[in-house]
Amino acid sequence: MIKLGDYNTLKVVKHVDFGLYLDGGEAGEILLPTRYVPDGVSVGDTIEVFLYLDQGERLIATTERPLAKVGEFAWLECAWTNQYGAFLKWGLMKDLFCPFREQKQRMERGKSYYVYILEDKETHRLMATAKVERYQKTTGRQQTLDFAEVLLHYLETHDGYCPLGDKSDADDIMQQFTVSKKTYKRAVGDLYRRRLITIHDDGIRLVIDD
Image (tube, rainbow, N blue to C red; front, side, top):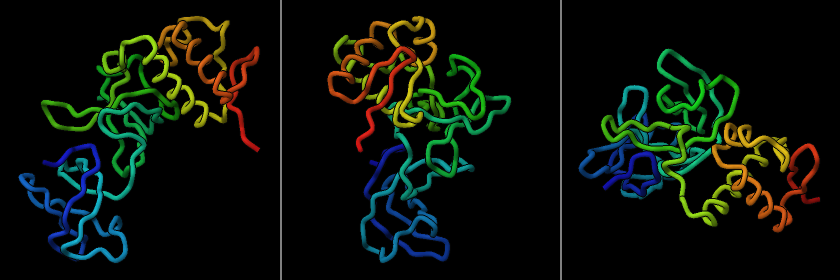
């Protein structure tokens, strides 16, 4: 059974001018467009691909690797918006949709947001939600460990700096990361003990290896 929004290893069953068709089982044959076909792949070979829906809502394969798959959290930049919601850059040709109902605040082009990737059970479309709390683990220690990795990724993608520190307002922390100040401080402490960050009056900074 194939997994939408995830990696699948599928067999090549047909070669056509515009790509390869892969055996999707009950889902039928799935196109891997020419621009994503690695050199040397032939009919009968197996290949790992990521499956999603294209602009026409058709199942399609790619060898590109998105920033996150279904069931994962990620910081994604808003590429554009329309009257239905926002579209986030996640490393594939088709941007990832985040409807207004799944936004905590109206997303703005050029800004990044912490989201969870999921499959809409009714439409089977892939989408993002900024209302991540219901998908996060609830145990205190595990939440701290999970968020420490989120904070580390944030630093790695924001020039190694976060302006939020011990003296920052709890509302600012909640708005930025959707976690309590207590969880934030614990995560900072965890990263500091691992010698991954330094703590300053104006925030925290990533330790850069020489």
